Amino acid sequence: MKFRTRSSAIIGTICLATSLAFATAYADEPAAPSKAAAADVALTEVGKAQNPIAGAAGPDGTVWIAERAGTVRVLTDSGLGEPVLDISDETTTDGERGLLGVAFDNELAHFYISYTDLEGTSTIDEFAVQSGAIQPDSRRTVLTQTQPYENHNGGDIKFGPDGYLYIALGDGGAGGDPHGNGQKLDTLLGKILRIDPGGAEPYAIPADNPFVDDPNAKDEIWSYGLRNPWRFSFDSGTGDLLIGDVGQSDWEEIDWAPADSEGGENYGWASMEGTHPFRGGTEPANHTPPVFEYDRNGLGCSVTGGYVYRGDAIPALQGQYLYSDYCDGTVRGLKIENGQVTGQSDLGVNGGEVISFVEDGDGELYVLGLGGTISRIDPA
Image 1 (tube, one colour):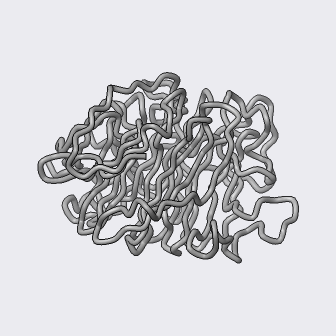
Image 2 (tube, rainbow, N blue to C red):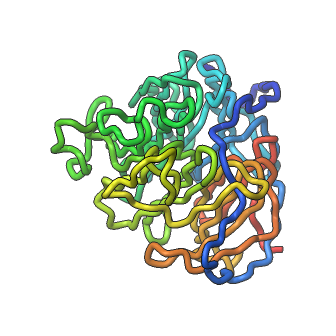
């Protein structure tokens, strides 16, 4: 591990060799909801990076950007600064591996990274933060999960409004969930996890997690039946949870859970792909269907989940959930009310190979293109 302040680092261009868990795209509009309110927007390039892959709102109004090869840099008015963290000798970009997620806790007192180590094990590490700077000697490993294959690692991490750390893990990889991990409760794979990293060493289990009293289930599980929940977020206005789950071959889905959910949702994989039985599967009795799905009849291949817009710069976007697709690149919006999509919009802008969205401390949103572009969504 290398920590840098003002020294320079040159990172070679990194390509996504297999797919980053991508599978379907273009918008399916069954019994089409109405168009959401029109918004004139533009993508303003604010920085260039080597395979930017994730980001988080940091101290003092900053935005921290993770690059897949293992570096973290802070976005300034003049672009990205020099790396403040470099774990490039501890991870690999083979397959869908690398530095995959970053998050601050709600007090901005700790910084977390989600990455696959050199053996491919999904790893969550924690650093203390003082005066806006990472404290290297404070590093500790919070959670690890071995991965049977090099794809479908998930890797996104977020702190919820409840102060707990949520972790997205894919089903373990290959294709078609060969080990049945999505529906198994004795594995962390194919799940959203919920833990309290400050409650014990290495972490505590929140007492109200849905499976803490089930001897046949992992206590860390919050929800299950996910293929590769590549990007998820919490609505900063309502606390609702939204998950972009990458499909296998036909359907991309966006899942939704209300802020008052008690967890335990079964999103259906691998019995279901969206609302459709997968390879002759039977819909689970407790299936929570997606709030939105789309097929791959167009240009897309893999949903990239985003955020509900809560910024002030574009009033017409207020309350819309913005998302994209890695292959299509178009930024789109959904108006969701009481768990139902009531409107859809096409923002008319394209972010390239959209791999992630980032929300800053003011609720404004950034689009990360894996090719290197960091763009802010601005009024046109």
